[in-house]
Image (cartoon, rainbow, N blue to C red):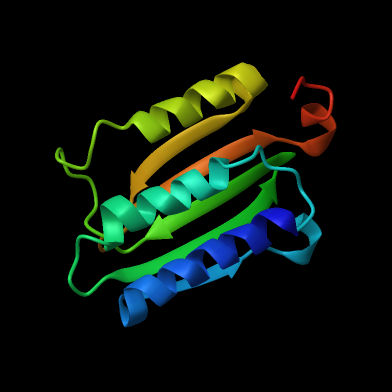
Length: 139
């Protein structure tokens, strides 16, 4: 419950700041609520969605955080309805650091991918190994 509670609190704070410009939904099944996610990985993705996707738009937008378990892997998605991919979005330091952390902790079994969210925005997909695998890996 820790990761989803933290994400909801973070988004609620930004909703106060952005007002009606920010809408969100966190959809994490009860069976996945207690899964361990490395600290700040999920919040980094949510922060990027706000900072680079929604905040620059006068109308703001929507963020949907979801999780599912597929084939023994935990898949967490942060989808936004923001600006999408722009060359002026920044240097990508946060995502590069996140990918380096994934590689250090999980090797090739963890990944971060970015995709276009139709009709507008970005989907950041964090894929982690099953808990039985990740518990045996160093923290």
